Image (cartoon, rainbow, N blue to C red):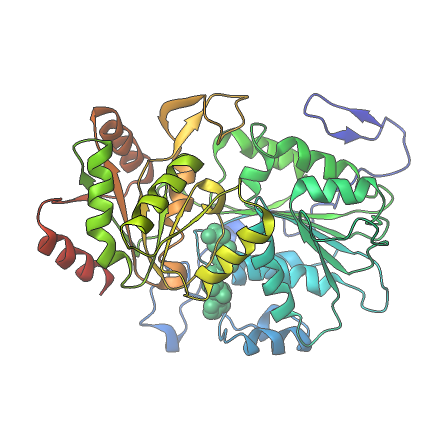
Amino acid sequence: MEKDADGFYTPVEGGAAPAAGSAQPGPNADLIKSTFEVTVTLADQQADPDSPLFSAKTFEELGLHQDLLKGIYDMGFSKPSKIQERALPLLLSNPPTNMIGQSQSGTGKTAAFVLTMLSRIDFTKNTTQALCLAPSRELARQIMSVVVSMGKFTAVQTEYAIKDNLARDSGPITAHIVVGTPGTMTDLMRKRIIDVADIKVFVLDEADNMLDQDGLGDQTLRVKNMLPRDHPVQILLFSATFPDHVRSFASKFAPGSNKIELQKEELSVAGIRQFYMDCRNEEHKYDILVRLYALLTVGQSIIFCQHKHTADRISARMSAEGHKVASLHGAKDPAERDAIIDNFRDGREKVLITTNVIARGIDILQVNMVVNYDLPLMYERGSGGGGAGGALDKPDIETYIHRIGRTGRFGRRGISINFVHDKKTWLQMEQIEKATSRKIMRIETNDVDEMEEKMKNALK
Ligand SMILES: Nc1ncnc2c1ncn2[C@@H]1O[C@H](COP(=O)(O)OP(=O)(O)OP(=O)(O)O)[C@@H](O)[C@H]1O
């Protein structure tokens, strides 16, 4: 095997073993472009065929196993969403074909890849057959809950590859599906606690983030390079965003993929109404947030800050002033992180102040408001994102799209509010508006009634 410039191992010429992930492009490789237009059936004439939730098909027509259909209906799903309808026939066809699947936040990508993993497991074998990686432990835990619910009527065995989950002396993992974060997954594979021999499916959720060379790219590649090479592994990459700089890398990572792509102007969900508030300075941002508190707690809200210390500072200050808020970021220990997100998920906490750690994937339907206390910024290459230094003046459009996508899930209404407090942040917001082709409306900061009225109307 030789490693190329991008770090991929490729078989040397004449080598007998196919590379991991060399699932051949099936006859369907270009089908998706030609089947993009769905037919509107009589019963759905009221439905908007362009909606990412609209589907002309039923789950039965997608060729899923009876036990999985039971799981799906048990979860309360009645019809596939557009990404599920379009992706599943391609994902389930044989020979298995890689997939790069893009659709807007909250449109049901998880079910598409979870159903694929579950469909490909041979339940007569107690071996690991599918791996799924996500960028945060919170998202890995959420994906696992979908695996468990959808697989409720199957014999699926599952295990986590997240920090502090396994005892040091735990034996080999024999679970069919392992879901985790790349660092721990690498560790378990290196120590041969996970036996890779029977792995057939490898999924990256939030794939653009997982492949980004400035983020988790190296670790993800390490996992991929440990996959078996004596049989094809179906590689599935899913995200709401695939910026240009990772697209070609993604195509190489998942060669011969079927591709489902969004146009640039379709990236964010139309049901999320976007606002901004003019603040005078940093201190004024805090005052406005406190004034918003009554509205923040009508449903549930997530407040995004650039730094962990800002999240901690705001939450400590608000708590001291009698408001009930929680803060969550990567510097907290794993058990505490689990307790905080579980409390928020169950509605025991209404306001979560956080960093980009939960900007992606987290699905909590009651969240109806997202506040960008600080706008998301790009980081210098090599600074690793999230650190204290290295932030550039450029907004991070992808992170913005994911952050606001924590509300407005699966056709629900939601609102997002950006705090802008100087020329720089104003210009950054303008760039976001342009890049996402969505209008961001002003809310008067001094008029609480107008603020309340606009927000209530947006959520109607
Ligand atoms: N066919 C369906 N019918 C009803 N609800 C569904 C269906 N598919 C998914 N959902 C629900 O929609 C919500 C969003 O799904 P999911 O979290 O998979 O979105 P996503 O596309 O992965 O979003 P993101 O890009 O933010 O990760 C979940 O609560 C899920 O249970």
